[in-house]
Length: 182
Image 1 (tube, rainbow, N blue to C red):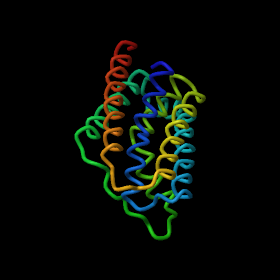
Image 2: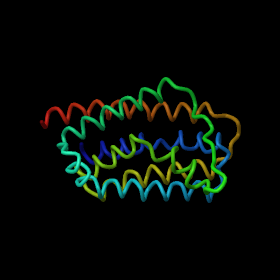
Image 3: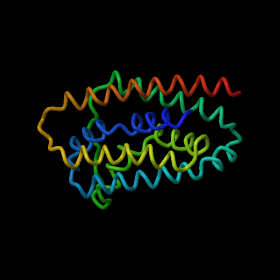
């Protein structure tokens, strides 16, 4: 996977438009919760990237097989986001800050984000993961915290579906790349 393709994959997986829809639906669009959730998600994705080589070795999986698995997860996620409706409200837990639940988990840190963070960390290095997911999380946090909920979510949903289509494309490329490298 090239750095450019990974950058697109990171933005499509983190899906800033979907993040904005989800935090507004959950009622946690306060800047502190949004920025805190984005910061937590960035730390988790960077941690996944740094631990990627160890995780793959511990699981006795080749990087190529991991890339194929990440492509499969990305493909299913992309298709689900393409045909599914807008995100539903995620519950908050009273004693847990909204930045943790629901902003970081489960809205931002998803299986596809973690799979791609490990893939990026192994294939491209730490810097590309920080750049890709950092940009995606900054876009998502800005959209969620700065753009008020005007009740008009069709444009945001269309943007999310466009990113889902990119995620499906990345999935196909990732699977083909993994198969070709075996």
